Length: 212
Length: 224
Image (cartoon, one colour):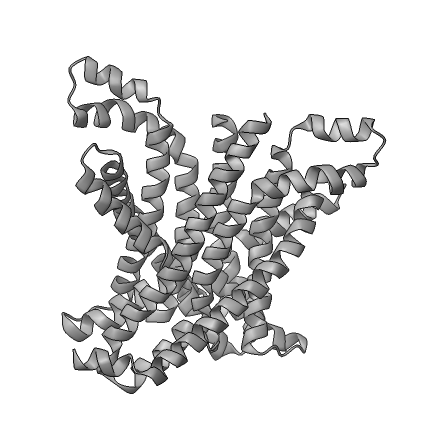
């Protein structure tokens, strides 16, 4: 294991960086898209609710790999060239945003409806009440499940290995076939994943306990 | 349009459905295996046996926080180093069971925790031993609360099976790749069909899960 780190340290570190980068980018955009659809689902406008429902149901029920491969294989065929990292990040963003939408929606629903009614009665518009009264309260409850979504995101980013995204898993495979010591390579890769995910999951568990 | 008609020929569709069969078969075998092992791990975690429970807890935390893909690689390429040479189907099932049983362990543990303490106390006071009370009183009630969560784990299992194409498991994803590998005109139709097939299976399951959640929830309220 130490020999793996000594020989292939730079590759592993590069993969680690790519995994982290892709996860953070995906988290950022899927938070925006996910929250948007969550708000759509709670609006009084039926059209937006239907749109949000369709988006969430479709992308929650299709494997991440299919979505990612779609961007990697189909988009270049008909539209424009796209590299593995971008295709993987877009796929991850779309897939995760559907889950985040569900999480945020549950958060919004857990806020007492009286809050919305009260702020509407005080003269705030629907959007103002959402923005200043409901969402801030919802996000507090949503932080632990969102953290878990981020952990899933980091784990799911291994799908980049399918599309030559040069992430940790991809580098791990390259190293494994180069060094021929598969076991220790995968243990090293696993340790690097755990560096990101394990502290996060303990932290989220702590937050969950404190909120409960 | 012609490419769609060609792509969805009887032969291709049969091949895809065979793939779907493998996907479902592997998922069913994995969920059964992981339920058995997950229940054991979850109970060990719950009853707090000295040394064993923290060790199991550590194992669960480590496996849960690793990508499934890594575990698939590990079983398929790593196990031969230990003298085991599983086929791609067995390697997938083993990897899935290792990964999914830790997920189910947490579900089982929280399911047991959700059963009111009075149930155990009442059963013990009625003269049952700890394990009798666990088996006859606590677990059946916990089971009911776990079912929706288990169904949603099953959905993610079906989706995750697609990852095993990388170790050449002849599942739905793999078979679709074989078909569109022959002809670039088939790429779009195949992806559409993949999305539809996965969606139908997973959506039906998620509707079932939601129904169960509602029904089990309402009976619980009636009981309380």
